[in-house]
Length: 288
Ligand code: PD2
Ligand code: ZN
Image (cartoon, rainbow, N blue to C red; front, side, top):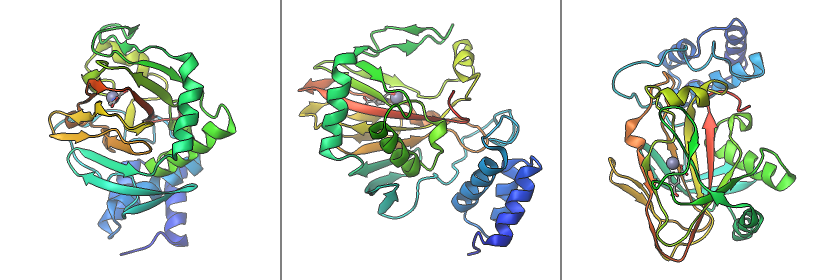
């Protein structure tokens, strides 16, 4: 298996600085024997260095999404059963290939979960969803949680967690939306939905104009839920229980900008106790 040595880095830097297409560079590396995940990361790192940020022109693989059946790239998450993510060893509990869903343990400590909940509690407001027709944020029966957002990098505690999560998701911290905390009381739920903005819906454009679409999600569980509250993927027969400090990752945009409909998912109604989660959504381009 070839390595990303100095010569390869020079080749990457040269092509990235000349605005070469990321997909073509990845394909060229794969053709000479690199694993796709290795090539994907090397190319995106080179583009970041060359441009200071991803742009519409160089990422991801042209402006138009490819049509047809979703093609699974290697998920950018590192291989192995334990992943060193910035400052913490994170356990890989389960990996699903189609859709790309990965369950992690030990992402947050109990103290971190408690701290996040106590900071969020006084700021909760009823959650909204995007109106597919005009993009407005509406309160609807499909989503009955309460939530709040932290500003990105708003203090050292939040910034440290963002670095850990960016490392785990192998996606630049600048591409992340601010952490969102959600609280579900008994009966509250988030019915099946996509986290990406479906391009065929008129209301999506207002949300994708500046930073592109969402690429992947990490849902982090801040408490043990005594009953209900699983994150479920109805078309993939996957269900993840809410366990404090654990998280579920799912990837729905590939390098060709296709979107994976199998990542339809929801938060099941809480049957007993309450549920606290934190979400991290990452975008194609820096989130501004
Ligand atoms: O509450 C959840 O488990 C959940 C699952 C999926 C929340 C979201 N998505 C979300 O807020 O997008
Ligand atoms: Zn969701």
